[in-house]
Image (cartoon, rainbow over all chains, first blue to last red; front, top):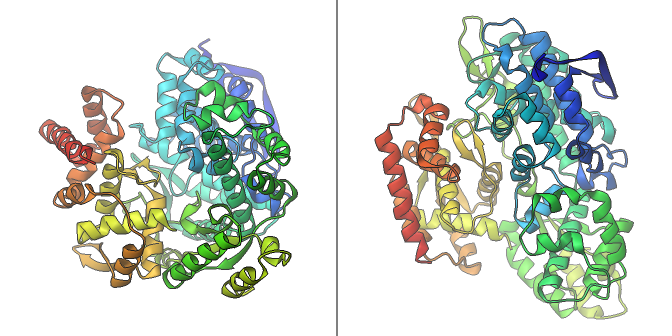
Length: 432
Length: 169
């Protein structure tokens, strides 16, 4: 029997708190889950620093990847099977791409990518196409199968329907992470009727569309996306932890560039500092490695690095104030000068963080073909963009809401043992 | 402060006015690819390279009152026009951005239509592939746009000319 068609002698299941069970019958999927590159995802948290705000948010990218696979499996096996617009030859390709779509994520990806200027998507491509266990399994399906999977994940595949199942404005990726992140953070906002949405999904040549009768279930999904964005993903305390994490990485990089002598050689970081990261180096990194360095850097001689690491490890985060860049940018320049005078380096201790710094998005109606919107399938076969039919979605997507916060070390500023008059001026400007 | 925002403001300033969100997206992507230091992350979407980060930054700049956005109806759809406001100009004068050859490149791009810029940005997105492979990608991924081989040749020539302009920096 061809490897691609091989089934396990009996179905395997993973118990899952969100989908109850994740079902695996295909040998290829089972083998991919067992690879070291996929197992690595167990050691990378889905929500990065959010566990410092919502203590339950310790779930991993492994959980999420299995969840996305399971949603896609249910769509194609239970809803699309037998429909003329769906080509069942694409089944395995779709399942593999769903399972592997986040494979290139590293520890605290967002901060790492920002500081060291790379894109985890490039590493996803390298893992799928490079000399890895994942690649060896995909190649057993067919010599060009890894390339096909890579193209679906990169959204550059000509199979647009397959791409849209994994990456679009209503895809399995978002449906899983919204519910999973809600479950593990303990908030009630991420709930929506996924079963209903799956039942009203219909395959079309270029994308998945939604039967008009399912519009209210989709409204609920859009609302939950909106709520999760502001209540969880953009939580100001998680952002504070993210700011500190980013500054630690910046500081370590700068020290390396200045030939600083670390007490313990940060060997796992060297290729990042030199901008020569190989796939092998990248795959060695996980959150336990990063936390090890943060732990030992607490004892470094560099006062900034050790202080920032202590803050992160012990959750002594920066305080924040609302900040309106348009009205307050002159005040920020003033604060910068005062921080310098007080001996508190503003490059590390006075940080503006904006909503555009987050890797999450809102629903976009794509008025000018920037993004493909969610389309409703009307009874007469016509397609209509969601916000044109739904007042709720129109209200959310039509209104722009942005946010900026100014982060600073509250404890430093409250310490009156030195530079008291300057700190007083700072406190007065910050209104604290 | 807000260095990435300032770069976008500079881009709008030197372009005078940018008509269309799609055009704005493609202009910044192309500028980034020909080596101007924009940091917005782009991914391939249905209509070519797109950056959610860029969309959000533009929204922030509009909310700050640094960018002016005019929504107008054109045929059956909406179109957006972007210009820099006076307070945006004042902010930029205090937070200078050094990209001396950006003006030449963006002015040139601004004269092109969004359809051509979509093609140019798609060609640049696949710059690790051979021209034959890129042509194949354009024909399959952009089949609804019905680009011709001649247009693809023009896109390559355009990229070369743009790189020459940018290289001067």
